[in-house]
Length: 392
Image 1: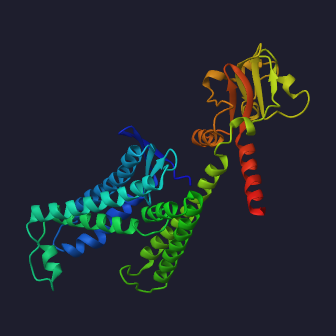
Image 2: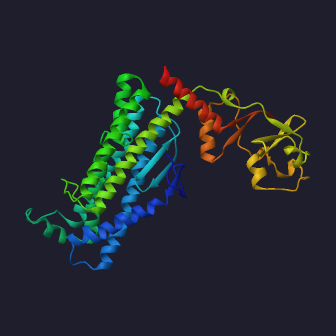
Image 3: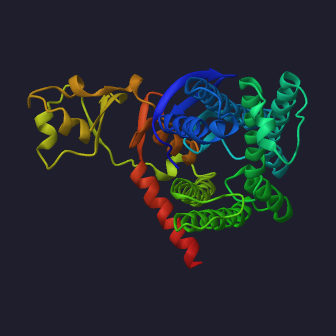
């Protein structure tokens, strides 16, 4: 599933860190909830400035703890030979994007469990730090408000941060794919059945069901129902419905991605590429390309059999040039084009196209162009394979 656009923050341990713009909304929601609900209830005597400062710091530290949660997945994945290219933080949390699926169910289990274990450790550490800074939480258990009111800003911040990280760990352990608990469930099913694809289907069903449960609970909250542990209200109901929808969609997308990977495994680019290409000399004039019809999808430019560039139909339409312009003047030189070889796996080529936002890739053998791999052809091939699988 494509996440919302964002900006690149840098690299941590060689892993690219992307912050989606929706993260700003997440920060605002967390800080706003703390400043308008949580800390005013805990500390009615605090000034507005102190409340907002503490709330903003707490929200920023919570987002940092989500990053640590994802880094735990990434470091564990690297240990088991499953590198992580990037971590994306967005409205609903974070996502560590693995280069490929773990090779064994034991690796999947360890990678999935690393995140909740990190959140739980952070939560306990924050609670310990809160007690170390503020002293033991003493007072009448029947009057918790008095205990909270006696805490300073640092103690209150750490108490909230510790509690929310423990809740995060528990929530992520719910056996609903693609939550960490769902991945743990998938690992155990994979180990029992020996079939990753079937295990993913089963785990995804649990994720979709849990998504519907959350969405249903959110709808009841919209109608004014007070639910145990969840409460009620318009904002809480809408938020829960949104999380439920996201989990349902993410479970479906996760299954589709694995199906695509499974279908394209061991399929070489040579099997899917086009070889009926229009090949022209660099000095050919543009007007001659249209002598026999509309602009072709792509034109290979070759100099005595050597691949020197490519001109796409989109380029011809988007950047009109005088009819007597030479093709070499508007082509994209071959050295600037990402390319694949005929022997490469088709799934990796599709990932490369998706990652770069490309619709096609030249297929080269040395300095010769042997074909063109187009995303449209790959998707049509996948659709045919899926139809054949359903009919079988």
